[in-house]
Length: 534
Picture (cartoon, rainbow, N blue to C red):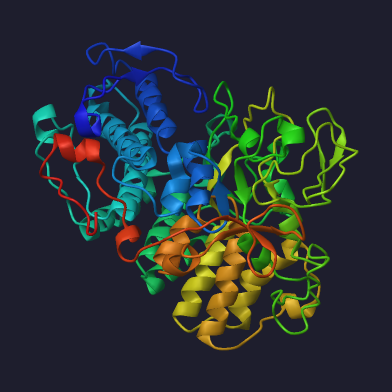
């Protein structure tokens, strides 16, 4: 595809691929395209491929206090998290061009599908609805990162791309919500799709994304209503929690009852990102995307108490026992075991002075924090290249959004707790009543509980960076050092309690709540202006 200046304004290349999860393999001119329904489906597949990818999914986690990326990997997310970036950084430039590439492709499908002769009406309506969803998702991301942004639903010309101004964030969000409401009846429910169409956007996905947008907009009652469309009825799809938390992230359990929308991999589309977060002795590369001590500390104890609460039973000298079972399912810590790609069990030792006799090489120091991510480890990957789908929306998120909305409305009670947080904790493996029963308390106390639950359940799924910004707590959690494990010796920079300081971060409010318009874009179009502080 030819890229023209600031928002990829060109005649979109259209590709033929016969399955949703296959890569593009053929390119057509616009004149020779739109011959039949398959051409429309292939053009739509190209939209799916630009909805998101593993780079965004994993890299976004390091934009939060959950993770750290050493060096300039993932397009320089560590520079953004540290507050030491400018409008020319790769991640900012890439976000802008990536989203507008998707928008362009979606507009192309929506505006040209009428050229297909004698097309089935229901299929045509569904394809348009899927393209409108992806376009809405792309605009939502643009508005969230940049605030005001160029907005168009046509195939604008090169000349227009050089002069178009920015539309207000509020108008864009209003458009996103109207689109997600308008397309629902044209989208099948999840149980209506044949197996060969698994992975496509459903009515449930449109509702769940609408709930997420409402949450980001603090429209609590509207968010509640959207969630109830998925909780109280099967009319909009049939969803339920999978029985095992850890199984959610294994290839054998893809397309499970909890899946609302995944990024599709397979059929030639793979990613090698797991080599960036697995131990060196497993993936043969030094890990660059790693969990933080702050994330580790936020996992509660089996009795439901935070590690700093009286009566929690937490022992700083034996910190990984009796913790939320999701901790060990998501994070590899000192002394944890993992089965490697050769089916050998390794004990991962990261404390200075360890002698990891069970490891093939000295693993200590491979992780800057002393932790690794286990979640999304695909042991079936060929040459480390995974085909494991990555969740965009899952039912657990709907339950958490519902609990949060009810609490902000002041109506989170024992009955609502039992339908949301309790279900998640029981599924995770909690058994003590102090962890599973409704804790009561003020809205403020329950807010902390629900937010902590959200962090534990959705860790390493790319959502924390969005949450800390919508909660307006980024200036608190990103204005402190990235910490790693507690050490007692060695040439480490440590805090007063002995925890490794990996990096100091800075977040300036309100400046850093919005990214700057990329330099490349503003150089091409002087009408874009710039966000405050940049």
